[in-house]
Length: 398
Image 1 (tube, one colour):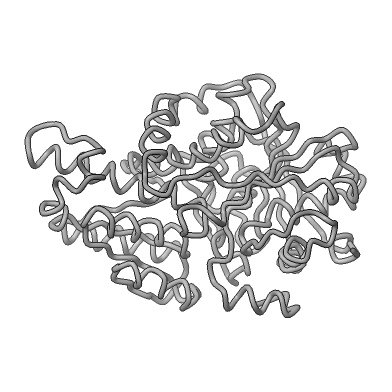
Image 2 (cartoon, rainbow, N blue to C red; image 1 turned 135 degrees about the vertical axis):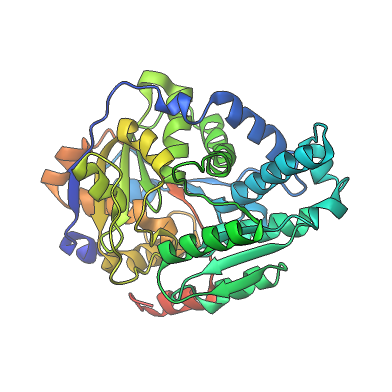
């Protein structure tokens, strides 16, 4: 295995301002994680996803251990998003049904179809780069609610079809992800629909909080499998919901022994990196789409930033050039580890880790050495077979 492409990569680094605070408990309370875990683990088809040990790669790049949480098998939907969008949809329906019926409605009632006739009158909408929308469409199909999904111009047709196949009405717009978020919000307000977003904004917090609580199932599985806390966790960016949820969950479990949080983002969509540099949530304009479709977000979730501004120690940007090689490294088992079929957004942390270990100065800044134990979140499997096939042919830009 050659690491030349990773050695040639130029990563940008910004130091976070990790400090003692309560955001990991205040924004995402432990009780919220517990309630989400109780519900989601009761769903038909629930099973923990694999935590894959990449011992060969760890030896190759000079660290003690790498654990890769492979979310490809999650509920047959291909990504960790299955945990968030569907659970948040249930919670939106629960709140609205309780309001309409004048008495408390349980999540079990919704899961079992008790109020399916009324659910048909409650339209849920969201914007997506693909995986969140697929999760929402799946949930709406199960619970009986109409679903409208807004996608931007660069979302692949394969991902759009997957949502249509689950009964969602898919609206493609000109513009980028942030434009689709705004349109979904505006049309929902006009028509009395309900937004189920994984990003928050002033006055809109409950569904994104529920989305992040759902992701906590994944973190719980990790902590129940590991025999000790990792020293580092590399987390992909996007709007920040995944990173904030995992960082908060790890802090709640491990306390002062929680791992160092390193955020990895595309250099083409680095809103968290720029937020770290500015010291506040900062929006960036996306001029060119990254190969990591699920991370092509220019506006951070303010709720997620509340957590990451306290918990993240480092922010990195990575070039697209190292993404496809990281996908192929896993798929071809180039280091003798188990074969893992991963999507483009899944390998942001992996690619950043490999590249960082080729740079002695950057490794020192990140506190990486031969004793480091790294946790990676493989956030998606093959969610678009056509794109994956192109990557496996050797295409670095698709």
